[in-house]
Amino acid sequence: MKTPPRDVTSTLEVEVTAATELEFQIAVAKLPGLTVDESFQFVLDDQTITPEEIPAGCGGRIHRMHVGPGRLIAQYRAHVEGQAEPLTAQDYDRSRYLRPSRYAECDKFYGFVAGQFNLSRSIEEKIADVTEFVASRLSYVPGSSDPIDGATDTLLAGAGVCRDYAHLVVALLRAMHIPARLVAVYAPGCDPMDFHAVAEAIVDGRWMAVDPTWLAPRQSLLRIATGRDAADTAFLDNHDGGIILESAVVTATVDGDLPTDKGSDLIPVR
Image 1 (cartoon, rainbow, N blue to C red):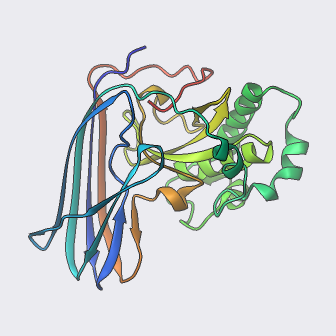
Image 2 (cartoon, rainbow, N blue to C red):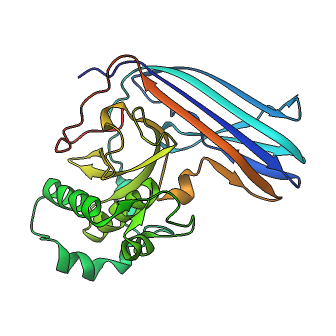
């Protein structure tokens, strides 16, 4: 099914309390198959800031800037047409995305998955089992988790938001020796609307989206940033002084009806 055109925006208001270096990851990843018509505006107390653009993996881009104290408003808009070609797994992916990481500590789950899942099943079946397990085990509760919570915290708490769901999926799949990672996305249809996070797993040499929150159809997702976990994909990083994030407003829509996600299909982030 052809993906209809998509429109996304994000507006962040940041109070900078001490001079610092900031990195934003809010731009749609530029990948073969996509046409991205976009605009940026970074304004600090009425002064326009021109950031440095740093290429990141999987078409992602980091926008880095040094700013003094003041009120910074970051605005991004994009009209996107086409479908990104599915990403193929590279040799290093199969190594890097099996390792434990800050928020997806898979080494703590080896015994758990051996007792909880049938590890003799196919990769596709194990991904379906993990998706069903996480969806049934967790409740989506905004404010129920801390930014420093990892997959073990989420499993014990039984609640979280999209990044917590994704971290638990990633940790469980890695513990099953299935390479998995986290993707920050724009998600038309997401309710509540916000930056969204899903997991990706390698199936037959390609990266496929896994999202037990079912907050948005996977066919409409637009990749922003890709990494081991949320430490690599945060929409805003502060590397020196002090900041206060005052607000973040995100929109993501499709032209026409949203696609229907049947849930059982293997779907890449397009």
